[in-house]
Amino acid sequence: MALKGCLVLQRRFAFLGHELAVLLKERGVDEFCAYVHLRGSYDFLRAQKDILYTSLILDEDIQKVYKDEKLDVEYLKKFEADYGSVWRFIGVDRVVRYGQLTREYPHDTSPYTHEEMLRIVQVYAKRLSKFLDEQKPSFILAYQPGALGTVMLYAMAEMRGIPVLTIVPSATRDVSVVSASYDRLTWAEEIFRKNLQGKPQEIARYAEAKAFVDEFKKKPVIYSDVYSSLIKHGTLRQFEFMLPGKIGSSFRYILHAWRMWHASAETRTDYTTIHPFWYVYDRTKRKIRNLIGANDLYDVFDPKASFAFFALHFEPELSILMLSPFDTNQIEIVKRLAQSLPVGMLLYVKDHPQMTPFRPRRYYKELKKIPNVRLLRPELSSFSIVPHAKLVATITGSVGWEATLLGKPVITFGRVFYNALPSVARSTTPEELPELVKSQLGKEVRDEDTVRFVAALFEDGARCDLWKLWEKTENPEEKRKGLKDFADLVARKVRLVCK
Image 1 (spheres, helix red, strand yellow):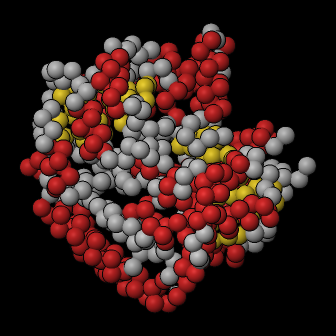
Image 2 (image 1 turned 90 degrees about the horizontal axis):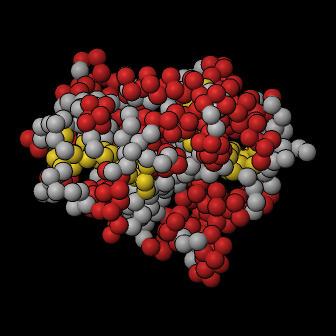
Image 3 (image 1 turned 135 degrees about the vertical axis):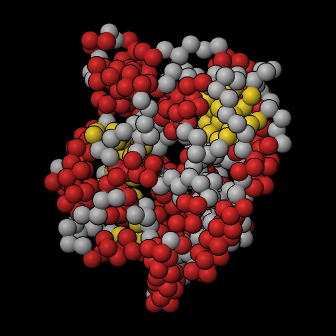
């Protein structure tokens, strides 16, 4: 049977995804089509000679059609009958719903009216439906969906019985996993359930997993060097662009952005293109906020205190909008969690290190109004906090997985892969949170369960640092070399779902 893959190539992932397609072709996938984000990625795929894609559709071109589209309410009612509420697709899109990405956080006003949003859903539904029906892919391969079109394509594929393979971050160094679902690790969970019943000597990769967990407890590390390199602590580091060696490149970038803006009418009218004026305006406001800072609002960390720990998320991002669509307001979650703690227990809150340059002081002041909340400095490592915490809570963040590895009970507010562990509980009903907190505080965390889950990850995944290949590796040959083990994994999953 001939195999045809449909690749969802979001933003800069297109360059890495294309190299993966080259490797999959060598492993038996005959044809490819692709749904692409960003015009630069689209132009690259059209110009390359490695693979002749049977069809390439560009997200930005689909979106533009809405301006001339007449709203058809009956069509959308039929769409909702098949795929659920249109807000499932609108709410996850940070540009369409919140006007972010093209504007910096904390901007949160959509550039579209209610009717325009509905027309956008309508044009995507028509174009993506036609695309799937014409191309008839054997499977779809995507990173976790995080925009209106990608979530819709996922839903439409499921409705048509087309297998969707999703690349899901495991937050475990050098381990990349493919799943049949975007919000959990389907095959790893199956292995984990079997592992729970087996003896250690019967479990594949058990010794390696135990060594990993033991080493992490002794010396915990951030799962990605790429992520850690993006963190800039302190006010002065936010002004590095003004250093003699960097100020020139900053001005050159702005001039380049203006030239590109005027050079290409197509790119200029793409809904994901950042207007150079707003780039300078938002960046200037951010730098002024950074000058003022929030140093006077931070509390002293006392490791001897009785406390629960909540790490704020970077936003806007998939981990909130897609995986926790009804719990996107982090201040409200902190309030809810704080009033669910037993007497004498504090809630320590720390912001995501990459978010501190963007947060306005008023955000932190709202948190400070909650009596039993203490705001910690962002440069304080979570690895210095978690070992002393009675409980760790997060929406879907990697801190929950790290806390699990460190032997702490965890509460999540969204769908995330480590929910599969017995020591992790997901909060879905606000009124039940106090009882859930009480239950988790009394829960015994078994390291043996964690080891068996890590063994399942190791058995099901592949050794591949996708973050590094995605963000730091430019040479195509180096990308292919780094992707080989992962391509083998994807090829095995393709044969499994397409047999």
